[in-house]
Image (cartoon, rainbow, N blue to C red; front, side):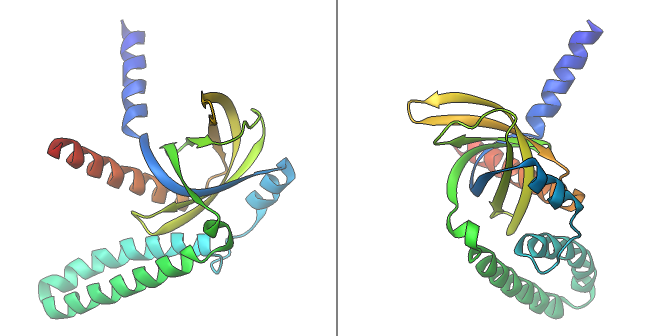
Length: 195
């Protein structure tokens, strides 16, 4: 009975941290050496992926301060909110101009903080290494991640589903992913209540 309870709890956690979503993404198969090299690289703040993550982290910190300012100086807080919106729009424009993202397409995705499953047009062998760039519109962020394909199964006549486990995902990127998942879950719950 206790084992069954643990299995149920694990399944509940899995459902809570996993969402089905349509996400703009770009992926390509890479070799193991690329994944190893990427995990050794230092953060480059000027790369669009790191920039988006840095902007999101700074945005979280500024919202805390803005809340305090809003209590004392509501007009200044309103102005700062407008400036933050402008920066967000500029960041979104810059991120969408990235080379690979211009080749991205909307993809049915099952997303979690530890891995994802995506729908692809051609089969990919289990064990292959993969580079994925995700554009998360809810957070105006691009996440570059590496993973290993753990399965590939035929979905329909012309599509396949591949499961990917992340390799060395940065903590900051994982937090942005979790934030996106929570936002999308809340949005989906609201949409289901209306329907």
